Image 1 (cartoon, rainbow, N blue to C red):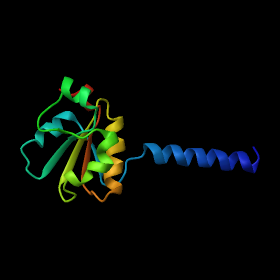
Image 2: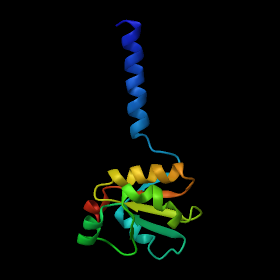
Image 3: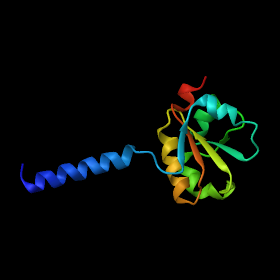
Amino acid sequence: MDIIQWILLILLAFLLMNRFMPVKGITNITSQQAKDKFKDKNVQFVDVRTPGEYKANHKKPFKNIPLQQLSGRVSELDPDKEVVVVCQSGMRSMKAAKMLKKKGFNKISNVKGGMGAWV
């Protein structure tokens, strides 16, 4: 391989690792771990699915703030409290968690598997 191919290979590996590596301050938790936090008054629960998905199947105390609206509605959340984020499969909630991290939130939990893994 010539040098350009090696550079491209290294760049691709870096991008893949960066995409899938956990972000500092974001923890992946199970649905049971999320349930265990329900009584904690210092935890906020956010469901980032669409209103239709939320209406069809949601858990209390999750508040529906769709991913597309989260950036504009971040002021509804307290950055000093933990935020537990859920979606249907865990992909949108991870995007939401990364967005919250960039907005200054320090303790964020993503429910891995989302509502699809809820037990």
